[in-house]
Image (tube, rainbow, N blue to C red):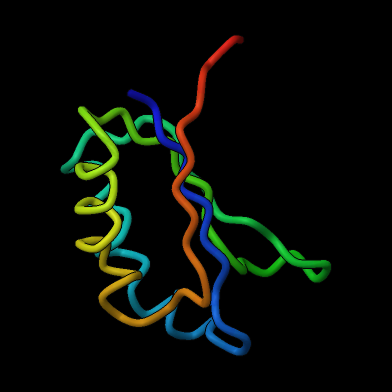
Length: 88
């Protein structure tokens, strides 16, 4: 099951993102995520995340999201998990 994780950072949290980026990227690699990247604001600064998870069910996606170093650092204002169907 493919799940799109869309997260928006808290206002003024760019330094939190930068401080935890190495651990977050390592987590992406360790858990086999193949598609992920930051959202960018009008200035080109990172302000959120889009990650496509390939998991067994929504509960697995929720567990993955809870264990993301960014989530543990309190970076996100909001996180949305939506089942996604890849067409192209």
